[in-house]
Image 1 (cartoon, rainbow, N blue to C red):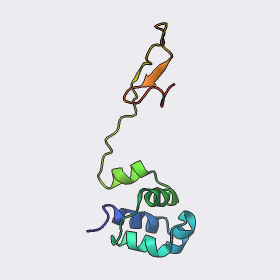
Image 2: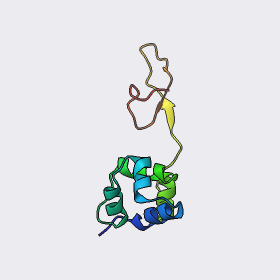
Image 3: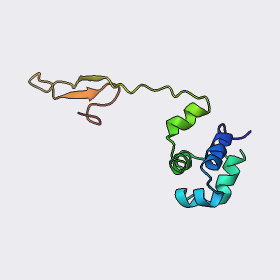
Image 4: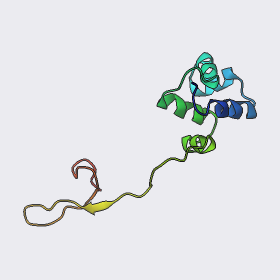
Length: 105
């Protein structure tokens, strides 16, 4: 079983008239590894996928959308009052779901 989307990566490279070696120079990934990814023989790690998308001048979101995967994320964040101090005053807001000390705005 190959990488879902490996054909898309290859098609984008060919569409841009890039050789494996030229894409390798752009990304810092060996042309042999890129070839194996395009053939669906190996799956890239996250950093490699980001580098390939950057080298092909597409976003990772665009990659996933073009292979039929809709990312399940929400750009909204939930801000909630931070816990109160000893005098009962809040000390700003925090992102819901995280410890107030780690993500304070």
